[in-house]
Length: 279
Image (cartoon, rainbow, N blue to C red; front, side, top):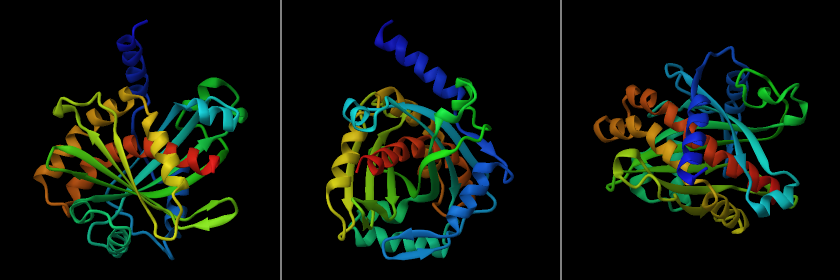
């Protein structure tokens, strides 16, 4: 099978498992609400202002690990589930996020022009599944081996590339608490003609942090298959158009980008989970 044929199969599989709206009664929605009630960012912990008018979206996917990660972790794949919620524009949460982005020296244009979302990702404990089909069934509740919550910003730059800003909170590194940081990922969208190019990741470490996490994350993103980012770009085309034509505070923008948010969020979140486990 050629690389093109293989990528087509992978794309079709991912699209079948693509982002789905979930009701407030879904177990992932409930877990997200609980996580949002106490979110640590830098030296602050606060309750996030989630937009009650924008439906949540969820997804589950299997990611192959790099050779280095596979050796270190003793397995070849991660099965990751995720859910995204829009954050209310103009809320106190957005002010806190922008203050933190300024602290870690994120470019002003990204800070001011991003639409923000809350993302939760969890590694599924596949050993507990009754059958392999349950691994990727969004409605099958499996125990979580690891979990992580983060803020995701979406913006469109002057080159019509989607800028995904991953704001990750406190985490443990060799028994010591580190204060996260920001990673900015540039993703080409479908109509740029460059969807097969790999993403570029630019870590912006918290001043109290070390470079260990940044190096791991950049390495993980370098191993993301181009087809997966191509799909993310395709899913995000509608979002990109909306960002380009709609005021950032408009509720319609949050709705237009919710599917894009979780499609990108689970890719970025999987690297976040992997690096936290490896470090």
